Image 1: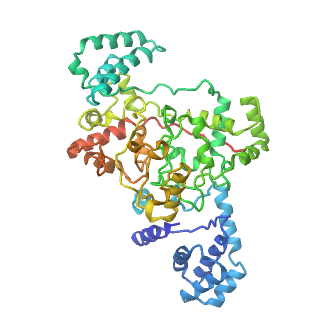
Image 2: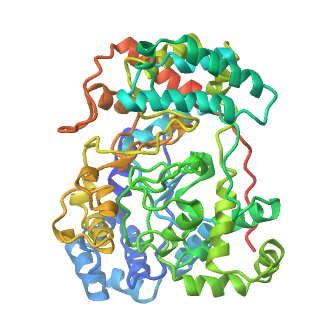
Image 3: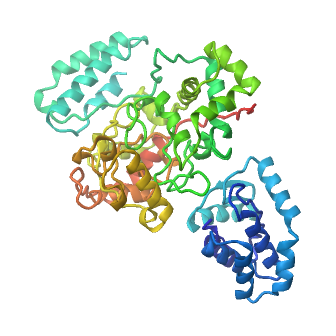
Length: 142
Length: 393
């Protein structure tokens, strides 16, 4: 849940060296987990994934539809397009695919990282992930 | 054997009666614990001879005892069988044991991470937060007190606790019994192993049987104690001297498991999340409430074993952990607040946490700290055992 700051720091530090792929795993028993995932991807459509991601974490658990639309306004998004996206569950298939992928890989915890195939479950400090990335960058140069 | 016994006898350490007791214990071990092997006669004799030869003044400088790993104790009420161990292994990895089907025992005790989860504060049931570190399960069968606060004595009793815990597996035991009973493979396996249907006691017994197989095997330290004088590198040898001497580590980290199984308030700094994250604070209050702590809503720190005994001397006291596989089982201490072994060594070198009554500054030089770390990392890491994951029915 608090993976954002660490991931962003890694992406800043290793610009051009690390590619980030994010998969969604909304918790099945949280009321708004799915709609929050939809909201983050709808914001990503407009280039503001991290902004929405951070806001959702900050405002959680206030993640009902009206609140999501207000957050889109706060971030200066095209609210009409955003609302259409979340109401039509535009990204539902993508989110479902991510969930199925997680289960196929026996993953149930967030955050879970894969760094060049190396699995790390749970929140980690920057230094922990940095060490793995440095090792993998070294291996990649060989 | 003779060499290893002499090594065991030259360790400085505990005070007064403890020293004498430790010495007597060593002699007893020398004669009793080795009965099953061919060296038992010699071991017994050498212990007796040394006891006679060493003057009392020397006895006063002995700490506990050092022992190589040989086997784990198995209770008569729950004998090990291959089928039971395999059943326990499946249950250990089965997420059915948690309320929402996302957590298994292995979620926080991952084989590749020395049966820890590698986090400062252990993973938790979704939407909640744990408050303590996930301890390694390696050699867990050698403990007489389980959990950081020693709340239970047997693995059979321990196994059900996390299942019931709201912030770990959050399961209902009546429910999980039925969940397991409706799985034909489990019903058949329980019948074969226990001669009856699955129930909570048998689930715990099978998991305990599996956990008794999690051991650190053939570490350089074991080979050294069994007489292989080349088992330790020069640095690790120097580290062992510090471990037994100036570092005073062996005062508490002794015996085959390098733990005296006792409780000490070393005043380890609190993990900041204890008060900074309301979910962690809630967990602390919940546990204190369950243990009938009258002031549970005003707690500002982890009370440790005090919650179990309500004895003031146990305030913030935690069990001495094993040092087996220590290089692989960080972060360290009951709350994972020390990330590396360097930080741990610094903590002890500084005399522990503020206000503690057990530790004093050690005055280790940089070189000595390096050697001590070499011993911990090189000597106490056993053979890497290939782990085969079970197929969950």
